[in-house]
Image (cartoon, rainbow, N blue to C red):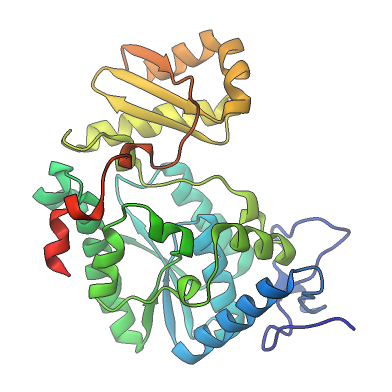
Length: 315
């Protein structure tokens, strides 16, 4: 017998094993989201996630276009419908231009009720100072902008924070919780792998999308963040994406760019050495280096603990 997750009755159709693109699952209105291929424990988490979002009622999803927030936005849209599920994308210099464009495209593909909003974290001196609490001030700005939208709709703000995120230094989570946000993935026990597994089963093309943290995460703590720096990083990473590197970081050290690609792509990066140098120098860097350790998500947080975070006084 095929097990189904209710009320997920019409969430997805897989056509010939292909991911759904411009024809979203709900536009097809055909088959059911069949969960027989998912492990029992993941099915249980999905059932709980559906129940949590259903109980919340109207929601506003902070939608960055990454695998986690895209999954949450898709589930919320299916469970609550377009009238009660609203996806909102914060647009600022810290959001890569490619990511803003993809949010817009995903919203169109999935028929989400979507709104881009401008956030002004760059106007906050504490954010620009870029100490270990920078993320706190960024999320505070997000909530100050998205919160009133949710209030007008009688909705709850939800974020795509998963269980794995709790282990990293992310003071922004405190800022969001203090302002009333809810983390449905955490409440239902979803890990990053769970999100990708269920997203793939649903046919969401974001299931294997590389992590794409805000551009300010490329700047070491203590180096002030500016629009010029974020723009330089954005141009360099966009150029490297154009060379075929999906998972890439350009870490900013003044005139020097430290490039991270996944370990399996190091040989490819060396073979494209000339093109990479030209692309990154064109973005505004004088020196171009390749990190032989490869890509490590959040590696600028190494050695940072919550006890070193001044924002802990806010909780």
